[in-house]
Image 1 (tube, rainbow, N blue to C red):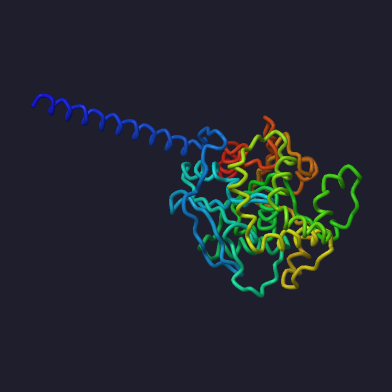
Image 2 (image 1 turned 45 degrees about the vertical axis):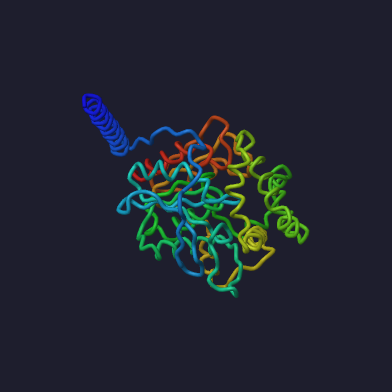
Length: 345
């Protein structure tokens, strides 16, 4: 009888300890959220979002991950090429724990995102990608969100902030102001700068299209290594993202995007007015934090060259420690902190 009482007592004490520990952790998380402090995290801590969702939005059925309380302030995180939603696998839970409702969509041509019509033009035009995200917001009934991204995702965030500022509360943009035009894409650059864009010229050829299609995983891994020379990602990390490049539209979207930038491919007429406005280099008025890794091996402008493109509250952060192009995945705490901070501007 006494042994049963002792067992019961131990169970009660154990349960009480666990309850107190959970309460303490919840208190710490709540305090961090209220103070605006993002908790520390080791990059690569998380490997999954759990189940992904799908929603019809515009011309697409969009695959996306979501996290955080349903009534939290919305944040949309946008990936680049050749990356995918897993660039934010550590950022999303950090923001969710800070009280945000986080959405991470696959862009057209990636992961489980599909065109609703087999007849739709597989268009990689930057303005088309931005319209996709506006349609995504409409489908989810998101009136306004903080939007953050890198590479294609940063350019998309820039376009939305410039053309639809009423939909963008604030922005985090890796590598700053990336809005361009076909005319600017025609301009020759100094040899050293042109050399950095080797893949763009390769993809402009039919040999490049066939090579990218045949070796898309090897191609993507090479870009990861060149763009983030100090990032020691493992095979499992790469393969999680590389699976999204098996999307049936991926090659067509990527090829069209880079050819369009060089004015070697036409866009769709329905985006012509948007492209005309973007060609003027519109100033971004929403609160913005731009970021750069100190070891970004991909082509990128110097922060001083674009600072005047942001007329609202603005700051720039260079993240040190050998951080490359895929800044959200390499430095998730710093990226998440920027999102929290810009939301408070």
